[in-house]
Length: 139
Image (cartoon, rainbow, N blue to C red; front, top):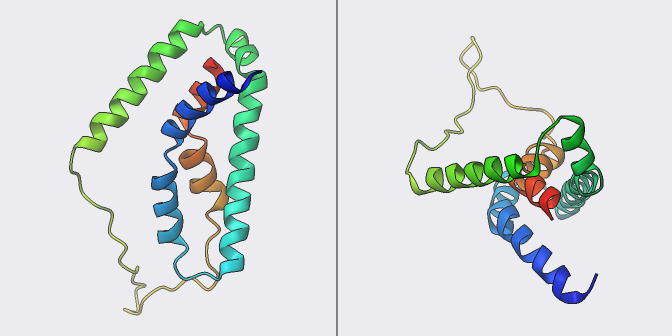
């Protein structure tokens, strides 16, 4: 594979993965964590997303053949999915609220240990989502 082909493969992948959105999500969820914990989360998320995408690079066509899905069907579905995501990004919707949950006694519920978000939702849907999986299969 020459350098031009590699660049032509990486640029669309960077557009679909959308690193700035993932960085914002990462910084929002990890705002109260130490630098070492954030490094560990970032490494695990990137390693997991890389493994998922490499799995589909090498076995994606075989998986489609096994399920009797034609390549043009995947292209049409992927284009439709990306179009719907684009339209939904244009609309202003309700923002999720992050109010603490109340337990029956009236006090706030606090998690004792922080939740690990490196694999899900950061690794799989954010970095290696349906758009990037479709793209690596089509490449």
